[in-house]
Image 1 (spheres, rainbow over the protein chains, first blue to last red):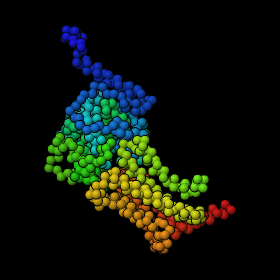
Image 2 (image 1 turned 30 degrees about the vertical axis):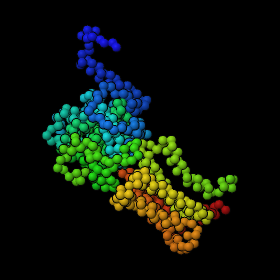
Image 3 (image 1 turned 45 degrees about the vertical axis):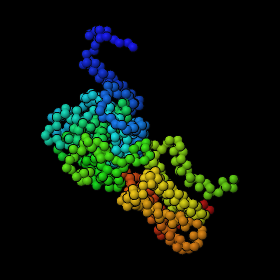
Image 4 (image 1 turned 90 degrees about the vertical axis):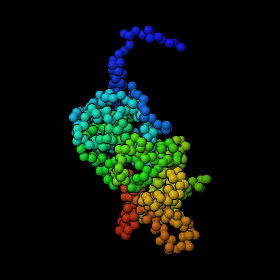
Length: 312
Length: 206
């Protein structure tokens, strides 16, 4: 074994941390650029590119991760069609670069972020979360991203900001499913400000350590693990801070079946089917659905005193 | 063998078995996707509905073409619809609910789309049971009355599909549209319409 004494490296040879970090960011940028350069040839070439400088996080699970293939071929992303295979078949037309995310509304610092600048706003982390779809199936997905609160803090919400609204891309040329009026486009989702500020709430740009595939909501999406999957808006172009509770696309479509909160709750059924159990993709027997998808310790306090049957 | 292959009934039976063979092939090849149980449930349900609609199209086709022999295949088509309904039901109680009687009973009572689907399945049983010649003879005119249940069953099948989809009603509405058409041509004016169409074709041919 070779043991180097500190004297082997002269102080002048040590890269100062700020330059080191810059280099790392430069490399990250190069990766993204490379992905961007490839766009002309294959629109989703960005997917699968390894994300550099991703840190481990405390958010991990002792549960088997859903295979990459299932996570990327079994999707609900109605912008590309209502079949589970439609997004992976058709999301090639989405161009995740260039991309901007506009921050507006009740904030002191409204700003339009370029996606590559936005992704350098905070260190990217690996986070393994459960994902429970309102349809009764679930996955375990290793996301890459940073807490949404990092962005919110920089935006400096005013005292009037009570809710955050997320707007997804509306462009039927890139998203052929939008030619059908299954939902009112663009897709809109919303969170209460404290939910959006919660440390679990993630802005994700990758999964399995790699750039997010288009069908999973490239280039940037929300992940709110204690709520049904549809709350986690994909391909976000606008984040708006508002005073009144936003009306999400699903609330507008079927108000009787989809509420604003949509917390995973085995005791409150969907009007047409039970939410007590779920099928974890890859498993044969159904498993019991956990309150707040198993994140009750972290999030139950957000809803103290609320009737969750009423605020479904 | 030659004789067997020349019989249309054999060909139709083989054709009707294709959806099942496809499922088996996909299952063995790992091609059922991320959620195989959902795939099998959807597939057997779809083919039940297709089977019902094909069965219901025999009479209008016979009126349109004047070929009375078409009626000979109707029973087999109906029985195949029942066969896929059984597979569909079995998938639900076995693969989906894993023989949990309490959960199944709750579903049937509480979930309208399951109530309707289950009702349709139960109603199919007496039709399948009375599909042979002996029962036809024994029941006489009541046989036809009983077998008119197929109209109700098909309607329930489409409602079952309509009520289970999350938002996109396109597919169930296509099935519903075809069913409405097949039922409409059974009404007096529909029958007359088919008659006219047939008369127009027959002289042109001869």
